[in-house]
Image (cartoon, rainbow, N blue to C red; front, side):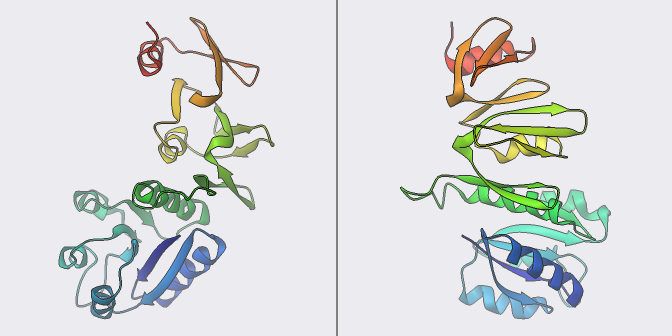
Length: 230
């Protein structure tokens, strides 16, 4: 479970974050603050994993607040102004959400947080690593081990599983970044495959769950190096 707080001087912005957190079982919103100084008092008493942090606030800006914290939780900035993006990443922010924040974009940020925190919070013996995938009005909790491969076709990505496929409108790079690097590899500009599901490799293609997946020429050497193929 990811523990978090939200800091924003706009009540409606806090309501959006609270509503989104309630829709995702992976996240526990411990508190919401309109005043940054009260949030700092809370953080001095309580340990949390993640802060949703507005940038333009009275008394203390969102850029200044993280510098007062030690240790510093993960930071996801929330703002209506895109000009702060570069500065936010200089502060090692995990993500940068532009208002109005869509649920799909919020979910992507949460998945990034889950991936960043996984070494600190490994899954228990009965709990497999999973990611949340938004497809239309549905949000799926997908076990990483169930993902056979991903295929990009135009503006859409299909996640192939034995239990059924999931179609979503998303960037391949963003989805690939959510998956554990040790378990997946990109073999083509349009394909990412689960290493554990590869059953055979040829020069120009490989087999996953009986399906032929092309190997792009620019990915061939990295694939062979990754798998230790001479």
